[in-house]
Amino acid sequence: MTGGATCGASTTGSGDAVSAGSPAPAILGAGINTPSATKASAPTLTASVARATVNAGSHGLSAAGCSLPACWRSRVMRKSCRRLPSQTRHRLRLYMYLPYSHGFRAILASSRYFSAHSYNRAMRPFAAGIACLVFLVGVACGRGGPAPVSSPAVSTADHGSSATVRASPSRSSRPARARATPQVRPIRTAGCEATFAAGNSIGQIESGGELRSYRLHVPPTYISRRATPLVLSFHGYAQDAAQQDAYSLLPAFSDQAGFILVTPEGSGSPAGWDIPGVYNENGIDDVAFVNQLVSDLSNTLCLDARRIFATGHSNGAQMASQVACDLPWLIAAAAPVSGAVFQDCTGAGVPMIAFQGDADYNVPLEESEEGVLGWVSHNACPTDPEISRPAEGVELRSWNCSDGDVQFYVMEDVGHVWPGGDPLMGGVGPATDVINANQLMWEFFRAHPHR
Image (cartoon, rainbow, N blue to C red):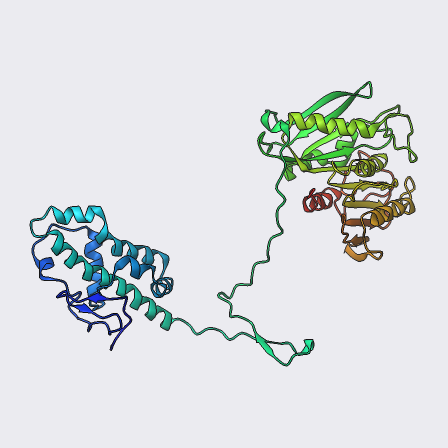
């Protein structure tokens, strides 16, 4: 091997200077050319130093004599060492810096054979040899690697140019990983300072001069200092919160998904939700009750203010639509099941996912379609939806909107039901489990927090 790369001004074994541009000294088969002082009897060195010296000698390298830290920081050394396995790089760097450590100096200083001057003369060739070992091994590894795979050419003729652009070669045969959607950081409420046990409970608050009740389900995964999403679930007309939980199966699903579920009790007799101009006008402000309920829960539970959602069935679906309309700053997204409505909302858009059977005679398909189209217009969506069929007998109409996406699932030959719910606990007409409303709405909720 003739010549080689150098690392600045080097020193030979006898201490003679070699210019920076001159070739490296000839390779010696006997190992690193060290001063005579190092050949004398010296204290036993650590196994690492001895192993480094043997390895350097087995490669037949001579000393380059350059400054070790400067050589290690040089661009050539860094590029060469990156070709080595990480464990090898770590060990070589340890061997290179060890002669400069205080502990190593103390060992040699305790010996009568080493003075400060002889130490410096002895260690420079040793460290420089290790440095050049790293460089030469790195070069050898780089030359011995596989040839890069040629990249396919990408023509730009379609854009009016005759140039050809060649894509950069890939470092791995594995496909590139898609960039993850940026996560929206949660906003913790005041209840994150309180302790609350998981499980089912019944609570009451005073609203509008009346005592109002609700059912609360906290999943077993709840941690009092971690912000947790909240889902409001509204029961249908002439039903109650217990029936809604049993019919929708949301409590069990919340344990899997990890959100807190609150199911308020309606107003009036029979119980329902007061939605002016739509249904059950009893003069009670149910929207104000929901607003106060969420405010109270925020002081006792660690909620995520960016992830508060609303759903419901029948009259409860109308209520979910109404709270999204009147409280857009509170509700991040809504999922009305068999009863979407739109009431000339004037606030910000709210993402909406709705479910409707075409054999529903309680709330006809045309009424829900009118409500969904109202949200399409309010959320600044394109006129024409993207239509797909995610399952047999199910049509999905999707709008990608600037102020909140809208999805509308229309199920053929399905009645006034909760898709995937317990047909023995509620609903009117043909049921379906071809799709599951709980799973679909939760996927939609997760993708649409407040931003």
